[in-house]
Length: 288
Length: 250
Image (tube, rainbow over the protein chains, first blue to last red):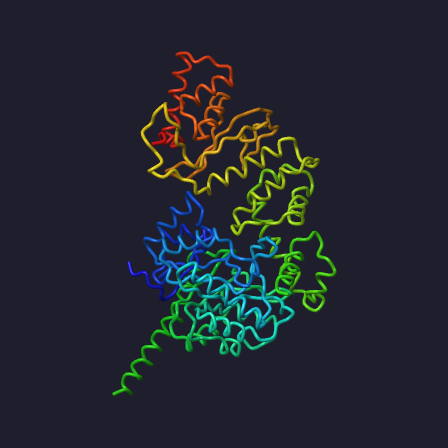
């Protein structure tokens, strides 16, 4: 089986499993899994993962590296993660630009970092260490944030750019998170996307959000809205046809409904693929 | 500076009430989003704990279960990076509380049973092929790594999530939980006292099966006679069939 990651993927979630295995969408080319859901776990979960690995290439997306955390990562976790990544043959491993553990307490959520020079240095060190420990390229993901952390000295795009360039890592660009942050903090999403290190994007995340009186919340429990689809198309024109992942974590619709969303994402990816082919052909002609 | 900020935010998330000084440090008056983090963190963890203990939650009075979770957050908080470990950590905290006035007398047993069901379903402890030799009474037995043996004071295992048995009958009672190797379903067996003591001894992994059976007979005051040996043979055959007993140490 070709294990390369291209086209549209789906975040593997337990409630989707039965439909995924019995009625796989033709446009679905790969899966993204959270290693923490399978590491140190026996029984039904690893057995199911084996079935999925036989049918789809897999890329891993973690929750617990706490790249902005001040506490040293759990060595046992890193060791187990390294073994797991090797076993599933992921081409890269991604985690979030956030912290999730402090004072020995695990929040099990993505807590925001200050966009400061000191934090850039800290995160860069952690990414390099993680890359060494895990033996695969690391991609970092921009998170949705509901506050601007005191002590921030730059925009999120500047922060992400500096981290990615100095750590020489890749970027998992979450388009919906940029949209959510733009809505909540009053900036232009396209300007923010344009300032991201788009040449480092190895994967895109797409998801739905919810509008509440408190603002836009990145719930992964709604359909992707038209504005975010428009941002995706705009981004793909600049990144080329990078793999796109659909995240759906709650309020699951019918499998047919989800299939239509996958098909829509696939159409965006196909457009970007065609555009890239035309560009390549033009470049080839002009070189004669 | 970073450590301080991160500690403050975690305190805001887990304290019974966020401290005014912590909220001031975060400038929460200008940015109410900080309290959104508190709600999101607590909601995810609460949902995880509630999902693990549906029967315990249903059998306690008023909002006692929510208060226990509040106490757990404020006094201990999650430590493991694995979300699925959180209910087990909550159970350790719950068991350390000597008084549970809002709970029925069988609450501790019920909590242990519900967590053990999840633990058995998830556990990764598997006996590798190299650890399993041919069966012998003279060597320590090798058991299914998911096996858990509980001695309960109340027969809480006789009810289910769908149909909790009321009233819960007093014990003591021995129960074995294991993961079916083929279906991965969790099975619960009610054991006689002698089988419970025997299986608990077999789990030790040090004594030969002969020593385990002698220990079980001694503890329960049984005489090892022909009937006893026949019963033992049937029990061991059943354990083999169920995938509980895998063989002996090589």
